[in-house]
Image (cartoon, rainbow, N blue to C red; front, side):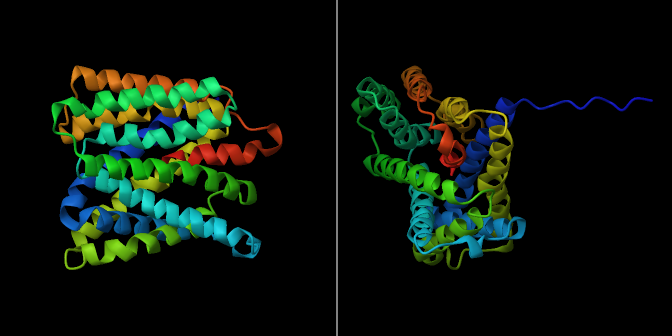
Length: 298
């Protein structure tokens, strides 16, 4: 009797599942934010994630050299600030809008890396989409929420550059067992006082579940996807993330976008897909580029 044939899951499906996990984790974080605040949520989620990564992978302590320390610390701190910024934005503006604004960071990095002046038109196109999303002419624009999302975009851009350097030095998920604890410690500065007195067993369980959704599960799925996809193809597919954010914002949070806002998301998605063209690193350092693309969801 012959064994049943194994059905291979296509790599794009793994990548989309990773993005769904990221955005679902973000949408479900809204309930936790109302209990312990955005910084408290970031601290709890990253702390649980750090513990999970320490269980799953051994930190490559013996491989660390002196020149690695500033990069690892910088990546951890950037991850912490980025997480607090995004969750603070999520407290004030819709999920899809927050994701689209934050996506301007990696989009600009991809355009600059293409070494083409014309490629800078793509971040400008996405910025036009963000204007349609925020609808400033309505007079109800939340500048603080947009500011937090813009800070998240800046952090995401720095995050990609630092992750690429870390990815060139370390393989696997061991490096995350180094950087995520630093990120958790960074968020503790603001998050611990914010969450103090509000942490219950139920909240700890929710934070543990959210940590699985983001960052543990997405990273594992992306690692599997990138074994069978080029970094450029993966980066292009990631342009769907703002649209997924809008979809889950609608389903989970009942955040209904207008026609103009949907048009804005379409512009951001098109700009993101176009910016990835020609953005692949040289073959000699392609492994690092692949890991950098993995960590775009951080």
